[in-house]
Amino acid sequence: MVSEGMRTEALPLALALGGLLLGGAASASAEPAPAARGTANPTAAAKTPAPSAAAQALARFAVTIQRRTLANGLRVVLVPEPTSPTVAVSVSYGTGSRNEVSGKSGFAHLFEHMMFQGSRHVKKGQHFSLISERGGTLNGTTNTDRTNYFEVLPSGELELALWLESDRMRWLDVSAENFENQRAVVKEEYRMRIANAPYALASIRLGELVFQSYPPYANPTIGKMEDLDRAELSWVQDFYEHRYAPNAAVLTIAGNFEVDPTLDLVERYFGPIPKRNVEPFALPSELPKAVAARETVEDSNAKTPGVYYAWLIPPNHSSEHYALELVAMLLGDGDSARLYQELVRSRAIALEARAWTRDFVGPDQFGVQAVVAEHSDVKTVEKALDRELERIKKTPPSAAELERLKQRLRSSFVFGLESTLSRAVELGEYELYWGDARNIARELEHYEAVTAKQMQEVAQRYLTDERRVVVEVTPKPRTTP
Image 1 (spheres, rainbow, N blue to C red):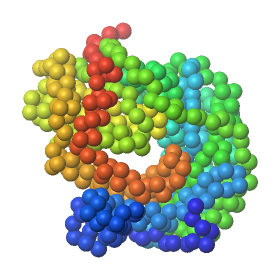
Image 2: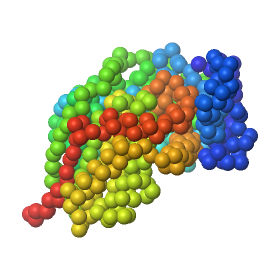
Image 3: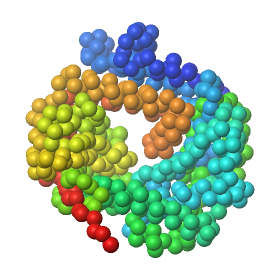
Image 4: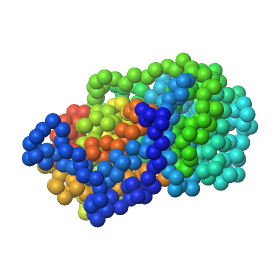
């Protein structure tokens, strides 16, 4: 924890991180990597690659991050940026769809909607109007591992955001009227994003099959229509009581503010909120057993067939996960990726092809998707996917490919922290998930340490037929009433 007397001003992020992505001229002024400890052999020390200019700049940026914990357990992350015209506030709660039980899916997402329906001192809809009238924006998001709420405002309006967030943390209006209204909103969102979206139902089924041995991650975050239909108000009230509390949350403030007066405001608004008995969530100590499966999903919204592959892989922030993320980038990140080049551009057997990791905190999913072109078929596309997967298993990527991946990753990582909002959200997640927002300082180094050989090895170990889930999408003609 940063000492109470430390008051380091943040460098403008453009100076701290900008211009360092390619290790060009700007890198000449970067601090040299420290000498390796515990060895007097200069040759041995030289074998350890120095962090890139972007990684060094990220480390310097992390020094400006300050952390506090209130008596009620609320963790506070402060990222001052004097040159910014705005300030962003993010509150991240350590609850998501992983905390739901069978038959009660979608509650974390439903509750996200409930949080905008008013509290003791804020009327329904007033949260939006108060922020927008002052030139600000706001929203909330839910995923498997957390739910967050955020505002971006002119820097002089910080106190408003803190008051609004504290009021609904302590005194949310969990009424029957608000509950029924938001249940209808979420059901309509489900129809729009899932029921009427091509390939969406197949994607949900893929997750259910991949995590069939680990139920907390099998639930779709948006929930299931039948669970939303039978939901009861008492379930929502209980969810609020046991999931939303200062000791289950991280408050992050990024942008133009003064630290000491801001800490006084945080204590004033959040300090009186009492702790609650928050139900703990424990991640598994070992990777659950992967179970192979194959299913076909009929989809009336899909114009052409599609195919999904997925595998259960180690948790985020493990050494193997970093390597698997680079494998996913190699296969499916952008038009230069192998799957796009082979299936879409060269052979034109697919309309799109991509690969990803879900980046869950616990056990994760590695996925591949291809949408079949009209003149092709699923069997042809699967053979092409299999060849590309075997290619990475047999031969490590070239040095040029690996460096291109790492350059794209540096760019994505750095520009992902460019705005005050992205910094507030990202650092709040680091604090919530990994215990210290300043851990972001080492993140790029983990990726840069991945070798081509390690990418080959994790592909061989985890992306096997014996561990694979396949979901085939078959277009289904719409029936006329």
